[in-house]
Image (cartoon, rainbow, N blue to C red; front, side):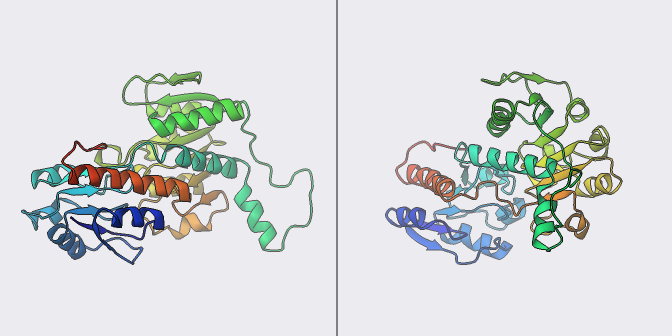
Length: 317
């Protein structure tokens, strides 16, 4: 079977893939263009796409009888793939849940601490050669111990963030989820709405899946519910947050700060965000650890092997 990998993957993953498939690995690190996606569906049995490879309905409409039988997505989020359109032309879609949970939760904690403790500002101060030494009122931030963490979306990643914050930092946890959810090992209160969580929390972490149902879930009204000293952290998908509304809230000092690993029009980051000292900006590092990326790749490969062997797919979406 012919496999097409749309971005360079860790060598261990590529070697394992080559042991089972005839593999073509694209050298570029940028997202596929529409013509490349159409060609992939036409020429290969399995395609391993990832974030930014937008297999939307229009792409499938132009390839109504694809050779491809599986999009083995490299990543847990799959809002860049129109699953219904894929299914309509006989293409299955899988993802890599579980492998990304702890690494993404770690990035949430990183952003929480960096934003609340003004670590980005401090690092820039030192690098610019402007630090004049310690003094009692320098870069005073917010200590997280005993504060309230609000989580929007209590899936695997949300629960992992809750455990770290509650057990490691001593934070109280409140959350909103579409359905009732018990959180193992953590005393957490489920609140009735997004606005309730935004109003109650000192730090808000966004951990919902991407897609049409959550686009701009965090809009101007949601941000207006936050308190002036609170910080917003987004580790979900960029368009879950209305970026223009977030910029306005930060510029007006309606909230104290933000920590972002994802962006609405990624990889474009607005100049307004880059100019603000009270915003921490990371280049989508959520799963950026070698062992995690290897685990993701091997999970995608497991789905492809299952297809080749005529078995049920381990991680269908």
